[in-house]
Image 1 (tube, chains in turn blue, brown):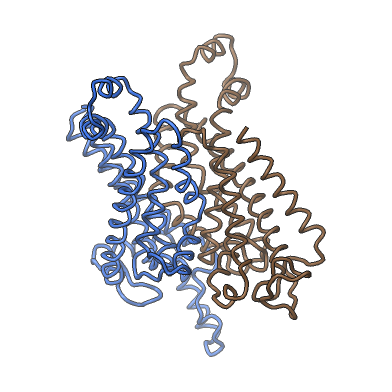
Image 2 (tube, rainbow over the protein chains, first blue to last red):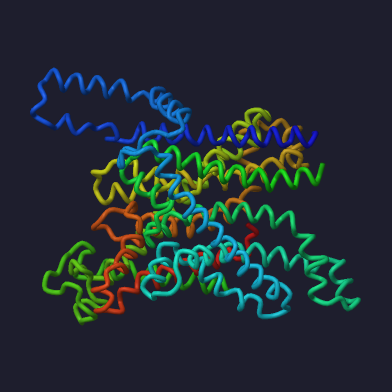
Length: 285
Length: 264
């Protein structure tokens, strides 16, 4: 297949995934019990006729098709709909918080990768004691994000970036160590070591170029891991980011915000995955 | 050997927790109004929480509920994943593509976000037992896509296996082939997936609970017990507040040790 066609099909697939994610969110909220409950139905000042009218109006608005049309219109207008809990355009809400979350994600992923790679590289080359050195990461894997964040607050050590970095590092360390261990054992590496190449030369000239495609795929997984951890971290540390907004939208059944956050997350995951697989496919092509 | 030791510790923990729940004079919901936020006493070995509930009983019950719920959810997830993966692997390629695309839709959103969204949209007025069942059902309902992918890949490889061709040549029906040959061959793949799911579900429940979306009070759960750590008055009075998190980490480390040899 031609590279242009590969790119086109990947973009199409990612867009379709986003569309399905948005449709799924709308359907999930549409069928949530009590979502369309109107407080006016409890108000005795409204006459029977008015109550019936309110109910008829609610029924009309409950159709998933109507909700989807309303969402599409708001997307075309550019305001992404009006938040149910804050009463302001979602674009305004998201715009202010996007930068905070993006910065946290970038810092967390970079620090996490730095920590994982700096630890996995020497440990993977060890003949003995590798498992012992890797124990802290195993321990980190066994601590839920929320507990880690709470522990940081209690100990007054670190903050959201540290927790996110530790989560990413713990998750990636395992993969990186396995990957690097198998690379260290490959014949050309053994040959290089036998010829007396320095560890630095081995790493920069042989190991890293060899594992680059797998590292790219792992980087995509890191984004998904970090996005998943974003919600509890932002909620516990009260970081005014997209994760906290998503949590508040979920608690208040704020459909326009939920759909936008779902689309945002699906697009980040989709395009990150697309970039890593596209790079590998293009290299193969 | 290591796995046997881990299994023995886990079994001992389960037995201990069962005995505590069974033999203790207190129920996990019983509130001792004379011993609110009490430190360790002969009546309450590990103290009580802010409502005067015995921590030992609550931690033991949380361990049993968490393990039972996560195991049941993992069984459901693996069943859905196996059915889905097998259906995709032995369907015509357009059907397989649609089925795998469906699993990709679930995978396109971070798991915790998806769980949080699904859990919060379920009934607000539910009993604690209903919330526990709902939480673990939500975990099971959204945990299958990654496993289904792995099973699909494994099952697709069997299509060209010699025993498969032999089975077809002998006139075995697809249903017979699946029951007699494919499922037994998939067992080495299903067991690791199950073992990965159990700790993952326990962690997810703890995270959901910490966000206020897990098992409802007064039923004890890891997530709800983590919320105790936010009570600074409780932390100042007793070190036993850290017991749930310590035990949770031990349980998760034991469960993780079962999966150490598995290639993710």
